[in-house]
Length: 609
Image (cartoon, rainbow, N blue to C red; front, side):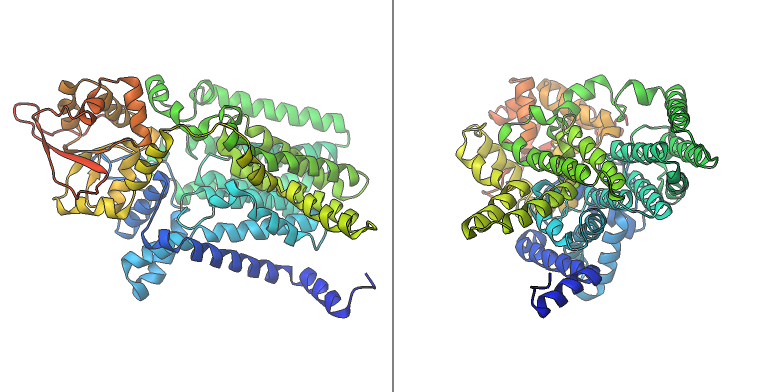
């Protein structure tokens, strides 16, 4: 490097010694661009996902005095409310930002700014953790490459976009911390990092439970291969079990005290505590023979699996959500993100899957090159993790953000190999074109250009109609006229419920939260069933109005199930005389009727939860 000017040498050294400062600056610049680019959506509180709306409602309830351990949403199917299986952990930064900003800009604007800023916090953690990981694995100066590549991870970056306040961003951040812990050469610190990050992820939710299990398996395999890894295994076991126990004590809601399989309830808490204790015990004696360590690990794993299956067979024999077969068929199986990648249209699947494949190739190449160096063990762990994340796409496409993010160490290593090779070539054209092509391929950005020229699963003619309805019915201007009516419970689509209660003072019958299966089924039965059956269902849920967003995605399911059902009849204009139309602005995307019960059952009862 003697040929570099002194100024470039100083900058290189500064990028090495003060990398945290520079990474923080990169995060601030990306965050500022995000806020500028999404300011319109922030100003109008355009929370596009049902879970983002529900997260804000959960924070509002907390700030308005609802109990710390009471996470029920009482504006869905009142008075009993909806059982929400989340924890308060993700609520804290949003609530803190609202309290900080409220005296300066008022409550409404404080909520908007908090929803815009909060998702950027886990993005900062992710940038820092991945930068640290590639410094340990690739080279001390490779971290800027990772940040640049991360900007091309479209699925991952969407989880950090302003207004994406649900828990996925924080779970990705803790997953990135797990990678940094795997790459840590200091065994005790690395094991503690993996254990704590896994515990925090499980406290939030079980979406990344397979990744936490894979991380634990990899930590255990490191000990099987090398007895000196006992300290890593010991601290991992302690922090995993202890972290889950402490997290459950602080964040476990009243509803999560039940023996459920879909959250960190006593079911998974006991599993994590027992697993942590076993791993800790395994690490105490010094076992010299590798085969014996493998046998011990196998027996421990078999014992945990058998004990879990024996104690909680309901969590092994069926889905963790514990829903009825009817609810699974009618609703849960229609969730698009739960489909495997090979059942997703190729136009959508390619951008998600290309970077994980490239990252896996890069990780394998990096492991092979480092096979005789101290970095080999770290690369082996990260390669296995990347392979697992890529394979998860074959289960559910919702694994895309994690798979893209976990591909970054391997993709960074691949660029770190290719770019210098091209720069050493004699011809300038080869150097410039080679670097450009290498970056476009390794980053996966070439897919964005190629895919537009391929006739892959072009949208159907109806898609724009559905997309327009999905968008318009979520908008602030469409919802606010409803507030002119006295507070009431509105019988509307399941996916519209969280947005309705967020933007208006009205209540809704249902939202897409599986613990409340009967209310969800009631909505589907009401809209797909006979007209004469509707009022009895509505009465069980105290509904005074019927609110329809015509052509919303959910309604296509109603039509497909019964072309002559209640929803289809309403859309055709066949409205029973006990539904009285309510005037809305001419440009409203909604149709609204008041329910007149007459001799039918009066609105009473809460519906079976």
